[in-house]
Figure 1: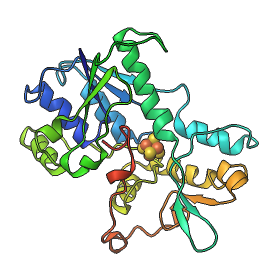
Figure 2: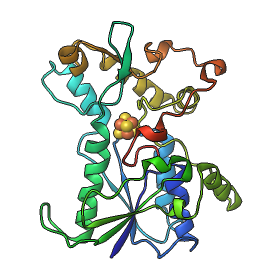
Figure 3: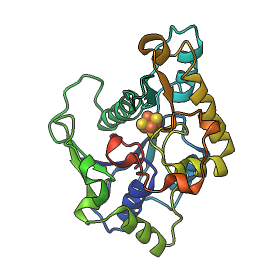
Amino acid sequence: MMRVISLGAGVQSTTMALMAAHGEIGPMPDAAIFADTGSEPAPVYEHLRWLMSPNVLPFPVHTTRKPEALHTALFAGTNGGGKRRYAAIPAFLDRGNGEDGLGRRQCTKEYKIEPLLKKQRELLGFAPRKRIPAASMEVWIGISTDEAVRMKPARNAWQVNRWPLIEKRMSRWDCLQWLRRNGYPEPPKSACTFCPYRSDHQWRDLRNRDPAGWQQAVEVDHAIRSPESGYSRHLRLKPYLHRSMKPLDQVDFSTSEERGQPDLFNNDCEGMCGL
Ligand code: SF4
């Protein structure tokens, strides 16, 4: 059986990979795989480069991605005469009657789950659609006890999902403590720059620490409300990245607004987004 880590490059999956490197979780994985949407903030790519550098992990880290970054596909789909399809992101939708809701999410499946599956098949040496024997691959997923609701069985008979942080009864806080104890830096928030599953604290962090990423998020926020966007053309709804349903660059990110605000990554995003 081959063992791979689904590496989201966030706190949990980074801790899991480093604990394996320290021999605290075993057996040693054969590889880690990072599914790259092409739209992560710069600090995430820096963190990934560090994880991939010599003497950090004793197993290879593979990256996999679609030819076009998610933000590029969003811009093309919203500006190109409205003809091109794009994977919907879970935007907040203003229904215009005082109601709102979260839009459907195709991005996780198309930019995270499918590329991961493709890479896993490739590592096992099986062409697309070739039958893979049952339980050929153990997939380690970095879900901690505070996110246990996100645990799901594997999609295919040839995969067996495993949650080493749950086995160790570790929460996200425990992961941060482990990283600190072992002298590792805290990993940055791992999610597309424009992911609507962000708390105000995380939006503010993006704005302050990654101006280029923030600019990209602001541009995506405007683009998805263009008259050519799928939301406007088919659904006649106005999508926003921020839950207040204001343009992102007009939101007041003062600390008081975020009181009691949940981190929307809890429970809402499956696949490897945010882990
Ligand atoms: S991080 Fe957010 S926008 Fe990016 S793929 Fe995941 S759910 Fe979609």
